[in-house]
Image 1 (cartoon, one colour):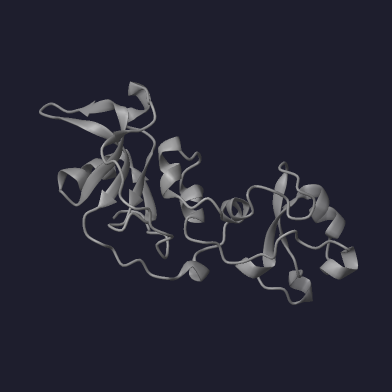
Image 2 (tube, rainbow, N blue to C red):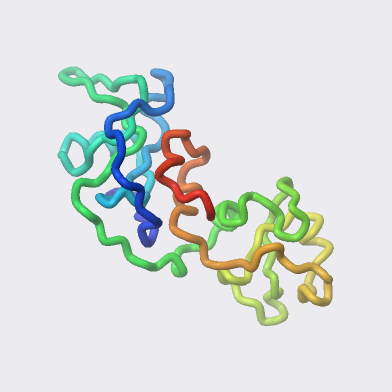
Length: 198
């Protein structure tokens, strides 16, 4: 595949009705957007472009699981606009989530786009729970989403000094978080293949 594959398959969805119609798209967005890629076991492992998904389908490396209502046309053929595809052959996905680059968007997605101190969903930044100046690391287990006011209030203090503790202990995210990072919006047709809890 062209793009990096998120680590570790994240739960399997049993095969159900194949070739079902997915969300409605317009001709203008039919070639744009993203396609959810499932492993042969139906575990979500990646997000790719529509173009890449069509190539995988035409090369018989994947099968169509969910399709949009619009079709894609070329000079000599017509194909359904893929929304979810499944790889025909199982891909062994490396278990290296802890090594993935930590980005603000990944931290926000892991923390459900919510300040871990007050619950606000606006003006988000990231905060080192144990400040770097006090020996805190830049690891998944020490970084949380924080609104700017909470970040300023906590400043360069330890949680007990500031009286501010994260609502949930920060941890390495499960692999499906990187699907949320790769796609700005999650189409309805993807939801049944993605675990509900982050």
